[in-house]
Every structure is written in structure tokens, then in C-alpha cells.
Amino acid sequence: MSVFDDLVGQPDAVAELTAAVAAADGDPSVPAAAMTHAWLFTGPPGSGRSVAARAFAAALECPDRGCGHCAHCRTTVAGTHADVRSVVPEGLSISVKEMRAVVQLAARRPATGRWQIVVIEDADRLTEGASNALLKAVEEPPAHTVFLLCAPSTHPDDVSVTIRSRCRGVALRTPAPAAIAEVLVRRDGIDPEAADWAAAVAGGHVGRARRLATDPAARDERTRILSVPAAVRALSDVFAESTELLGTAKQAAAGVAERRDAAELEALRTALGAGGTGKGAATAARGSTGAIRELERRQKLRSTRTERDVLDRALVDLSGFYRDVLTQGLGARVPLNNPDLDDDVRTTAERIGPAGALSRLEAVLACREALELNVKPQIAVEALMAQLLAGSAVPDGR
Image (cartoon, rainbow, N blue to C red; front, side):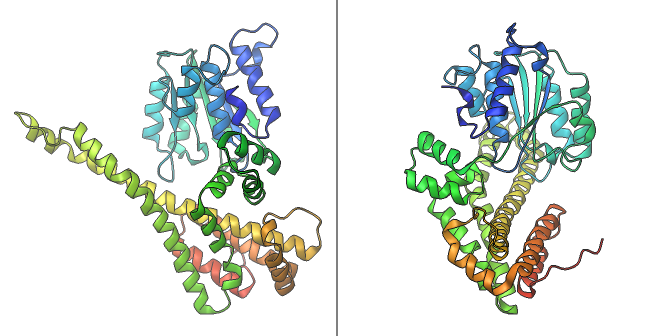
């Protein structure tokens, strides 16, 4: 058993990280240069960037180089290790205030393990100020501190050139469906047939495959999204489909809020002395207003991000469908992203042809870009539906 067992279809990355752990452990058979203080994990969504970073962190802390069952391995993977700090933005970005606090804590000596490790799961969400705060720490790192950054790519829009130049890159690839199906069966106990189907339609995203295989609501959501191309036939459908898609995103955000917000607020109030009696209770209650407002602000940002993530997942499904239509129209002999929708793909290809598929695919990608630029979701989604109806994307005016 190893902490790297759940890193699906990444043998080259596992070999590099294993060598780095051995070098950090003083193994004379491995060059000392195999280990460094800053790493950048890149790869497409679902390739396992954060899984790789956490597994690497666990192996560095583990006296047996990642056995998978000791306290260091278990707490690191679970996110509760005292010397491994994770930065996961609940909003749309990572603020300079948050990054400064993490960097300050990372400068301390390890409490229980051998390293202070900082895992930044969405380094592409760092603001300019946060990037600058991190850069100072990466340039002059404490002796026992390791920074593990995760981002979609090494493009300057994702990670600044200055930070990237100080990190060693680990490029992950999209895992094969067979590798995903194998881990679903082995680790999650999923029926082989269901695992094969989920792996085939998940687009190489391990987490998505697991959710599709285990959650009926996820399967229903996918079915509903992939029915949009056939449903948009008139102008009235543009607004009806937009409203339903936006409503689905809001419902998902509301579900997250229902599960977490009330419990977080109650826990904070209790920590601040709510319900207490005695001489200082009234003063403590008055002083808690600012902390409660800050929590509510962060919860609102988390809700916004959840909505955007649901919309983005829907757009990824749509882009995969139109990619299938395009390949079918061109007669390309490549596997489909949605092999279970072969008849729908063929029918749509006959109806709109390769040019129509390409223009619609461009429209979907343009909508994703608009959402990344913080265009109001209602405007972006309604524009997309109108373009799907018209069959051509709005020309780029930049």
C-alpha cells in the first residue's frame, strides 16, 4: 500500500515524486537535486493535481516514505495534519490577507513531522497581491518548508512567470478510462460495468467518474444538460433553457449552503461566547459582530463559486457533446466523449454538419471564458443559448 495508489494513470509523476521523497530522506542512491522546496503540479481537470500534492506531502512527512497507513499519511490525506496546511479558496480568488497568514505559519518549525508543507490547490486563483506575498516566501524559503502549488497549466494567466520559474513542474496527463475504472472498482467497490460506463463518459475526470457512478442525481443532471442541443429550437427555448440551467446552479449552491452555513455560524457564535452568562458575556456578544459578518461574507463567496462551478461543469459536458458531433461529421475515427449517446450524436451531426458543430463548440467555450471574466451568468448563458439556436458564435470584438 502507498499514498500514491490513488494517483490514477500517472506513472512518470509517481516515479519523480518517489525519487524526491528518497532524496529528502537522505538516500545516497538518489541525487540530492531530486528534491526542491517548491513544486508546481499542472494538468487538466480531474487528472489528480491535488491528489498528487497531498500524496507527496504525506510521503514527505511519513518515516516510511508514504506507507499509507501511519498517522502522518492518514492525517495528511484527510487534511488534518498539524504541519500540512491547505489553501482552498471558497470564493473566486485567494486574497493577499489569506496568503500572508499561511506564509507566516509556514515559516515555523514543524510540530510533529519533518516538514512544514503548504498545499495551494487552486494557485491560478491567486490575486496579484497574493502572488507577490507567496513569491517572497518561495524566493527565500525556510529550511524545513515545502510549497506545493496546483494549477491547470504553466500559462502566465494561470501562474505568474516569476513564481513558475522558482518551482519544479510536475505535468499530469488525462488518465485512461481503463485506469479510472480500475481504481473505482478497487478503491470504491463500484460494480465493474458501472465503473466502465462512468470512466468512459467522465472525460478523464476521476472525481466526476466516481460521482456519476455513485450518485443518481449526477446522472440525471448530465442527462438534462446533454438534452439542451435538441431542446433549443425556438427563441422561447433560449430563455427557458437558460432559466433552468441557472436554477440548477443556484439549487446546487443552496444545497451546499444548507449543509454548511448554519453549522458554521452556530459554531462561531458558540466559540465567541453566545449563550454565556456572566460579567463579560454582553461585551463578548457586541465584539462578535465583525467576525459573524466576515463569516457571512465568505459563505456568500462560496455560494457564488459553487454556482460558477456547476455552470462550468455543464459547459464542459456541452463542449464534449459538440466535439463528438464534430468528429462524427468529419468522419474521424476517434473514441467519443459520450459513447452512450452515439445515436444523438449522429442525428445532430446530420442536422448541423461540421461547420455548425464547430461554431456551437466555439460558442460554448466563449461562454466559459465570459464566466471566468466575471460576466453576469444570466447574460453569458442566455447569449450562449441564442448562439446555439442561431448556429454561429458572436464574432470576437477584441
